[in-house]
Length: 281
Image (cartoon, rainbow, N blue to C red; front, top):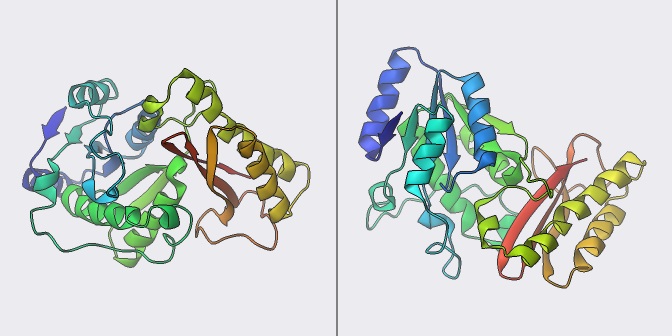
């Protein structure tokens, strides 16, 4: 496995690989790799000749009162994880090498990113888009492999790739969960035992939405109310949003659930830990 820290070296390597006819898959991460990332890597391995994993804690994604300094980082463990999963290249540049001092160019997507996390984290998607435009230029992937836990992020990046004419396909892989149902996420490490037990309520509440749809309910307001009610029974959890959206466009679904196409998504605070999850109904 090759470890690349220099952005220019990453671009030169990618250009060479494409010249050789290699298909490149990029798995974009913030590091602190876990089995959810392993699932993405396995999908990338199935689809491409060369698997690149980027491991970058992106400062542009964090607001002034968020957890940039605290966010989990373990570069040696990430490298070992990538070795075990037969990754070809791990790309882990320093943030200051990607975003030079005085950098004033940001990329924004203003439709798909407008709701949900775009309301509660208004800075977030600009940071996501700016980083990924750089990654698409540096790693030159044929495939960008993302996870459905971050469904809105995936939809935003699909829009960016399409509208800015990047020669890449966005591939969405499903959610990897722990045995208790909690969607795998680096921030789960912040949770103590009792917080984690309460956090699993989020997935169970979303499961109620799926049960309602499977029983024939298509009334959006009822489904959202049911999910919100289940979450609100736990004192420690505070709802940021519960919504039903089109899984491709993130447009709110108002007139009736479309089975197989509608995503019921939620974000909560578990004490001071922000968690997101969703279920396709």
